[in-house]
Image (tube, rainbow, N blue to C red; front, side, top):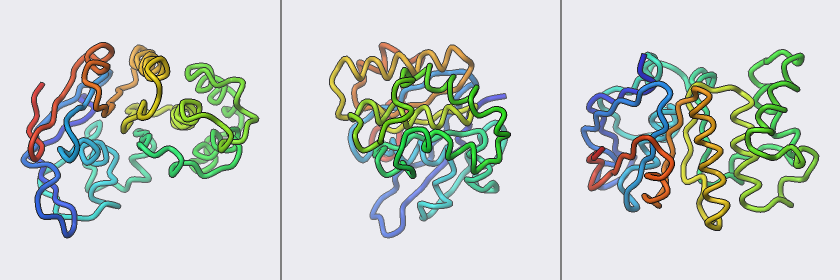
Length: 224
């Protein structure tokens, strides 16, 4: 089964003068590591948020076509239910955090989805190891560097063991070595069978690490 299928999707935000994406059709296979790039305003974030169900459930507007994730229509399924299989790391990680300490942030999703507490340590240890943040579990989030915060955000999603991980500019504002470290981490996730879709302006970085790169132009035209 394909991980994501867009079928003739058009979306325009409320009060917008033009479409964010127009007549978009796209298939992402399970286990792929796909990069999405393009200049500002071409629909990169909209594309990602549509996969997670934030479009059109939370980000309102005119939506046409269909998006399915592992065979489930995102319009007919609540984002809460989708979150059991789909993890989203937003561009502004600070706005995504809900806790003060790293340990509490890592546990938040597990608490909310009723994961048995007997599984917590295995899930948290594995997520922290993959992201290289074992030493940060007892730290205060606001005291971390930008790169450390991004790794914590990714780890908190990985603890949920999603089948699809979506990231919006996860390496934004990081120095080149930190950017590459983030992408090396994502490549390891793909090797574990997780489908990874990441938006990034640096096309060279995507071409180095991703198996496929999609470029958005105009109102959402796709080149592969």
